[in-house]
Amino acid sequence: MDRVSTGVPGLDAMLGGGLIPARPYVVSGPTGAGKTILAMQFLAAGLAKGEAGLMVTLDEPPNEVKANVVAFGWNLDRLKILDATPDIKAHKRQRSVIDVGTTMDVRDMDQVGEIRQSSQIRAMEVSIHGVQKMLKQEFFQREERTREKYKRIVVDSITALKMFTMAGEDSRIMIQSFMRFLSELEATTLLVSERLNPKILETEFFLCRGEIRFHKSLDGNVIRRAVSIEKFRGSRFDDRVRPMSITNAGVIVDAQGVVAMTGGKLAALGQEYLEQRMGEEVATVIESVMKMIEDAHRARLVVTDIEHAISRAMLQIQRRNYQKAMKGALHAQSAIRERLDKARAGLPPLPPPASPPPPGVRR
Amino acid sequence: MINGKIRTGIAGLDRMLHGGLVPHRPYIVSGPPGSGKTVLALQFLLEGVQGGERCLFVALEEPPNEIKQNMRAFKWVADEVEILDANSDIRRFEPTPVIEISTEVEPARMREIDDHIRKTPDFESHEVSVHSLQQLLKTLFIKRRYDRVVIDSITALKYFCMREFEESLTTQSFMRFLAESKVTTVLTVELPEEGQAPPESFLARGEIRLHKLRDESGIKRFISIEKYKGSSHDEFVYPFEIHSVGIVVLVADAAAAPAE
Image (cartoon, rainbow over all chains, first blue to last red; front, side):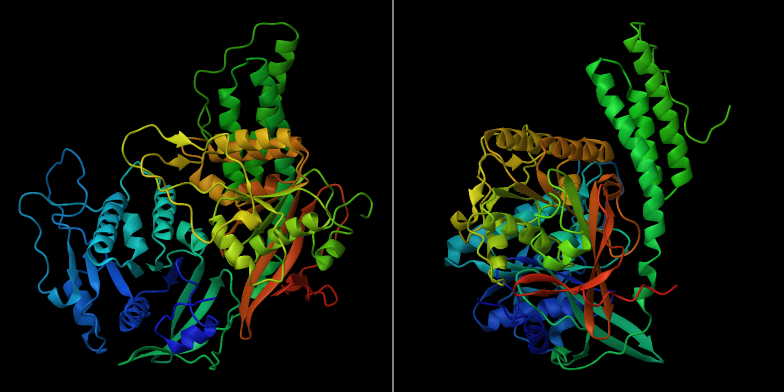
C-alpha cells in the first residue's frame, strides 16, 4: 500500500513506512512539544515532492507561523496558508455571529507579511462552519485553477477550533461532521490537538485513524522529548516510546532509541473491579424500573418524574455515587410500582407531582 | 458449540468465556482508542461468516472503504460480511429540516465496497439518528435473519446521533431493543484512557474489556471479562497481541494479578 511520508524518517520507520493516505490523523502533546513543527515538516515534505499543501492556522497568525519556521530553512514558499485566527472581539453587542473571513484569506507563504489588522467596523468570529466553508471554497477553486488537489492539510489546532463552537451547538457533532468533511476531501490531514484531560474522551481521538503523541518531561534541568504512536488503523507500527529532538533540521526521531519510563500504570488495573460489582446491583434495579416505565407508557400513564429520577440515578452511577444511585433507583421503583398497581386496579392515575423536589433538599 | 454457546473467533477468548458467548444477546467490548475493539468485533463476524452465518457490521466511526482497506493488513477473507454505512454526512448548517437515514438503506457486502469514500450529496445530507437507525435495523431484522451483528461504536451513536435525546435513557432503550431482537450483538464502547467507564457498560449482559498499557517495551494489551451474566468465566486478566491473523490471547500465561 502507498504511504505518505511525514517528513521525519524516524517517524516514518515507526509507522511502518508512513501514514496511510487520505485519512485524518491527530498529533497530540503538551504545549511546546513540537506539534506544529512536525506539521510544517509534513507539509514541506509534500511540497518537495510536488504535492500541494494547505495550512489552516487558528492558534497563531500566519506571520508568526512563518517566523517560527524560518530557522529550519525549509522551502515553504508554495505552501498555502489559511488565516482563521479570530479577530480581536469588538466589545459591543452584535445581532448575530458572523462567520470568519473579512476576506477569504488564503495566501502563499512567501506573501505573508504583517499581521492582518482587525476590521475597524466589525470583528469577525470564527466558527467551525466558517472554517469549513473557507476550506471547501479554497479546495475547489484550486482544483479549478490548477487541476490539482491539495494532498496534505494541517489544522492547527483542532483544540482552538473546538473552542470556537458556537453556544448551543454540540461540539462533538460539529467535530464529527468536520472530520467527515476532511475525509471526503481525500487529503491526508494532520489535526494538531492539545491533550487537555485524559479522563475525558475527546471526539477527535477516537474518530482519527491514528494518533502520534509527543511527550515532554524534565530530567534534572534538561528537557527530554519523546514520541509514540498510540493508534494506527490498518497498519502495524512500532509501539515503543522513542526519543526525539528538535534540531535546526526540524524534528528528528531516533527509531532505535530507548526511553526510560518511570511509574507503572499496571498497578491501577485491579482497583476498577470492585466498583464494577457495586454498580451492577444498581443497574439491576434501574433495569427493572426501565421495564416498568415502558409498561406505564403502554398504559398511557405519565411518568416523567420517574424518568427524571432514573436519569439522575444513572448520573450518580457515572459519578460513582453508588449509595445515592441505589436510593434514587429504589425510590423510583416503589413509586412506579404503586402507580402501575393502581392503574391495573382500574383507579384513575394519580397526577404526578408538579415538580419533583431537587435532590438533596430536605423539607 | 459448547453448551449452546457460540464461538467468538478468538480461541483464547472462548476459553476465558468457558466456551464462548450465549447466543441471542448483546455484549459490550470496551477499551480506549487503539486497544483493538474493531479488530475483535470483525473477528467475531468472520467466525460467523466461516460457519455460513449471516453477519452485519454497522459502521458509525469509519467509512466502509477504510474498514475494508484496514482489513488488508490481516489474512482474512471477509467478502461475505455485510456492512451498513451509518456514518452521518457532513452536516448542513442551513435551517432546512434534516433528512434522516432512509429506511430503504441496504447493507452492502464487503466485496462490493470500493476504494473511495461516499461523498455527501450536494443538496441533501443524511443525518443518522438513533431513532432512524433503530427503525432501519428493525426492518432489516424482519426481512432476514442475522446471526451476528456488530455496532461500532455505541459511543459514536451516543455522541453523534442523539441530538435532543436524553443520552443514558436512549442508550439503554437501544440496548433493550437489541436484546429483544434475539441477535447476538457486539457493541463497542470507547473508554477514556483514565477514569471511569461510561454508564452503558453497567447495563449490558456481558462485557469484555480491552486494556492498553505502556511500559518500556511498548504497548501491552490485556483482556478481561468484566461481567458475564448466565455463565461462568475466567476472572483473570490475560495479555493479548494483534497479529496478522487478528487478536491472539495468551491464555497460557495469566498476567500476574495487579499488585496493590
